[in-house]
Image (tube, rainbow, N blue to C red; front, top):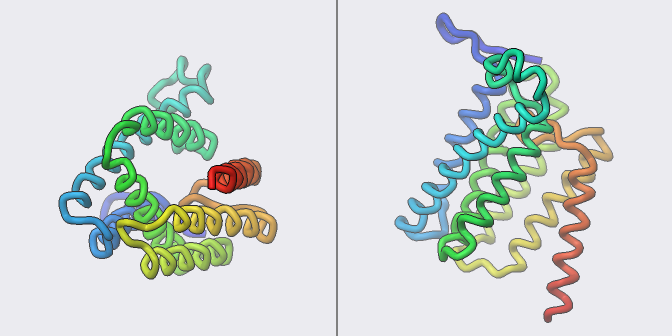
Length: 219
């Protein structure tokens, strides 16, 4: 597998390069297909960029918590060392808690959450496409690419600014079911280059079923 790329005097991790390209592409594709007005789109991008900064900070926090003893001995090495999926879990959890607290009373919360889903799906499709084309173990990402392609087609065809709640249940159901099946078939799934454990999708499945049951009870 290709792990690094040489750009002039610099040696850059392929995954870092692909992540940067995919995120920029995701934002661009979202701006081209956004179901929101220009002002709502700008506000949503501002909110997402803010959350992304916090995610990076919380991933660093996760690395420190996971390697507490090593951090006291050599803090710089821990901060610059690549994060693993466990640090990502901590970062995502803390970012989710922060977003729930920060945007709990804001009208733009729905636009931010929808925009984030759109950007991530676009970015994942671009990332997995690059991984399949440029890495020698591209077959690992073929399943992820197919799932990401289905999600992108779904959201382009069906999403509007006033999408009903059923759209959200549908797309998250496809994500959870798709990831769960890929884990059973391929033995692993990814969020960009981070490996995601099977227990995460089992937990998400329970949460999803609970939400569906709660919706049925309310109706």
